[in-house]
Amino acid sequence: MENNIQKTENVAIIGTPCHLVAADKIDNFSDCLGDTTLDLKIGLFCMENFSYSYMKKLLEKYDVDMKDVNECRVEKNYMWFYLTEDRLVKIPLKEAKSCMRKNCQICMDFTSEMSDISVGSVGSPEGWSTVIVRTEKGLKLLENAEKDNYIITKPLSDSGLQIIEKLGNKKKKENKKEIMKREHIGRPVLYRRHIPQDIFEEEVRYCQFEDLKGDVIDVGSCVLCGACLLACPEDIITIEDRKPQIKGKCPEGCNSCYITCPRTYIPEKESNIDADKKPLGNYLKIVSAQAPMIKGQDGGVATALLNYALTEKTVDQVLVVDKNRDHPWKPDAKITNNVADVLSASGTKYSATPIFKSLKSYKNSRTRETH
Ligand SMILES: Cc1cc2nc3c(=O)[nH]c(=O)nc-3n(C[C@H](O)[C@H](O)[C@H](O)COP(=O)(O)OP(=O)(O)OC[C@H]3O[C@@H](n4cnc5c(N)ncnc54)[C@H](O)[C@@H]3O)c2cc1C
Ligand code: SF4
Ligand code: SF4
Ligand code: SF4
Image (cartoon, rainbow, N blue to C red):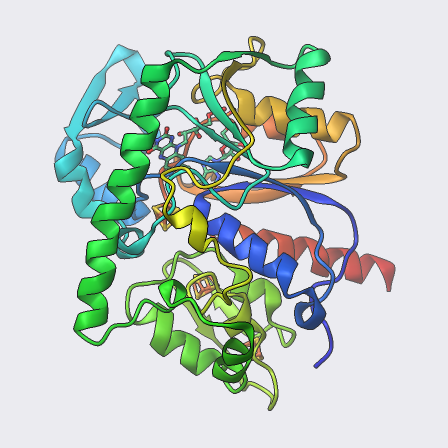
């Protein structure tokens, strides 16, 4: 099977922990999926995500139109919606959780354990971000960004660390229960079944889109990341709104979508089994940080690091998630080399988005340009 993902330019991605697992698989299976372009991975903390359409309906119940929302935050057991004309609506998180995506109930990663650098809000004072550095590449980026005055950092407080660890443990503990429950009723959670490389190869050899549908999509495990669409050499996977679908026939021998999906098996050597026992995974350094010139969701650090990586030419493009122009607060992933676009994408959109779909569109457009 011809490799599908071809290296063009170096790309930085930012995403939720599940996006980062897909990115790791794309990297690790380059022998069958093609050379990766994902050169810098910035992960976000994430406790849960919401369905855009359910959230829109819930807000209508509170007489709120999405287009009037200026800012959205999850804090102190509420979802806070800051509206135009200084109105504020808060919805208990318990109620908002009715809009939570089912796949988030089996997610074991709070702080993007597969990233170079993870950024979140919890643990640091208001207006600051918590930054977890996991790789040498991440460390170099953070240190250089601070040296060149893109960000400032300070030690994370002991109480801050305790809060993050508590939440990391809570997510792992509660969701492990749900995983066991699903396993018990015959809905296996494949990505938690750690298997050796040779068994992995055997298990996935003949798995095509129909298997992905049965094992992931139809059983409420799909995180809507779009990695299957990116990997498909036939371009027959579509994701319009809710879930991946197929338009066409799979050629014999192809299993790219199944291999790439973050919710199918992950071979032992790629998985983070040891990190599972640690609330925040493995890391080198943890600090509070702020980008004083940027208005972000928290400290604006995610935006500052992406723009620093672009300006310093560490990467050629970044994959960010902005708001959709026609559907306010609907996340819209785009790939750009323009710092103004990265600034515009700051702020959290609390719904799932197939970020790898835009990488595919970008690659297809580059291929057309060069032919
Ligand atoms: C679904 C979701 C749930 C989260 N839950 C938590 C939590 O429980 N606890 C916690 O401490 N932090 C959580 N965060 C992270 C937090 O909201 C901030 O994104 C983080 O602190 C970075 O802040 P910042 O000011 O540095 O980022 P900014 O400078 O504002 O940049 C934010 C970046 O996030 C990207 N982004 C926005 N929405 C999405 C999305 N839906 N998918 C992928 N990328 C996106 C944008 O491209 C932008 O580059 C969550 C984020 C998301 C997307
Ligand atoms: S599966 Fe849900 S909770 Fe887990 S990282 Fe993805 S969006 Fe967040
Ligand atoms: S949908 Fe079919 S052709 Fe596309 S990657 Fe999956 S198995 Fe291959
Ligand atoms: S089925 Fe596709 S969109 Fe869903 S989690 Fe797997 S790779 Fe991502």
